[in-house]
Length: 286
Image (cartoon, rainbow, N blue to C red; front, side, top):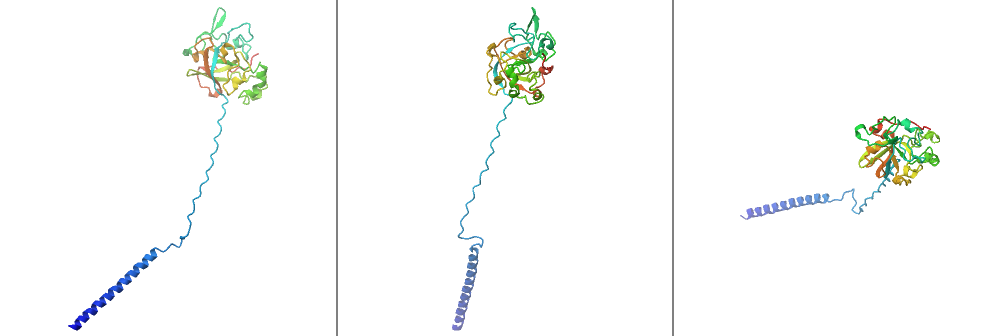
């Protein structure tokens, strides 16, 4: 009985020793892998200082291009009167007859006669309507019935003639540039004008100069919307024909209470309309 007991004790002790040995081996192996998993990377320094990110330099924005200067600015709220070929409103005034114009010494005949109706040997105006494109009712014109004047006579006024090459916006374009110093060539005649009034827009050609002033370059060509220098006829800044009077629906056939806006416009920008049915192209007539 004693030997068997000793054998059992030895076997138990041996088993315990084996278990402890195996346990130590497993623990050592676990610690080995744990140490390896916490080893610092060879590419990272534990004493490195974080690098501050560089502030990007802003790219300066280009300054906006200046707005182009409009060579044909609007002239607003301008008093307009009405005139017509054949009118004689003051037989004693040097500029009191529309039988002639500043550009045409025989305007009455070249236009085709009285741009209205003759009564008591007087050429009077008449109301125009859209029914026939605002054309005359009692005659057939040979030139455009949509005409007007502006106070800059570049043929007969010495000051206007001398300055026309500097003040007229289209003076340096063909065919005007070659004729700036040609006294028989007008830079104004036949040029187009756009006119608006109460939401209506019409177009006409310059065929005379006036009213009341003949060298008002600041008003005619300036960009500051200057008022006309003329103090007569209600301070009017232009005259328009009966066709334009009707097209713009003036309140009066021959008054000085109507106001409008106007600006120059190049011929290729003029839309088709009754004003392009018969375009005036004639030059200076002595």
